[in-house]
Every structure is written in structure tokens, then in C-alpha cells.
Length: 91
Image (cartoon, rainbow, N blue to C red; front, side, top):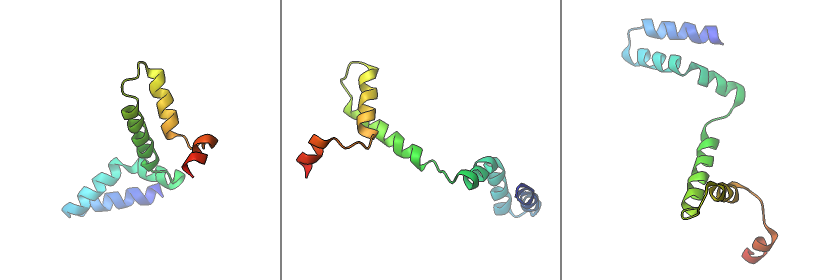
């Protein structure tokens, strides 16, 4: 796969078509990440979701005195545990 990829990048660069040259340069810069996706099928969407949860926890934890409380708030916000007493009240 990598040989075919490099051959195409070489062809696109020599084509002198500005959009193709630009695309070839972009693919060459991100080649490792593109090929990694085919192996792992993971995107950064998961990390973006976790980042959003951490930011929400930071907003909720304002006013707490130390980092341990922030960490506890992140765990409380990001986990998927169901607390029986709270689940029963919401039903």
C-alpha cells in the first residue's frame, strides 16, 4: 500500500496541476496518520468527546479548593456508572 501511495504522490506532484500538487503535499504530511486509521479505525472523535467532558467538569468544579476535587468531578462527569438511589429518583 505504501508503494502505491508514494507512486501516486510522485505522479500528483509532477502533474503540475496546482490542486493535485496541494493534495499530494497534504497527503504526504499526514501519511502516517492516514495509514494508522486503516489499521486502528480510531479517530480523534473519542478524544474530543472526553475533552468536552473534562471541560464540563472544570466548569462544575469551580470554587473547589484543590486538584483532587477537580479530578473527582471529572470522574463523576465522565463515567457511565448508574447510582441506584439517583436512578430511582429520576424514573
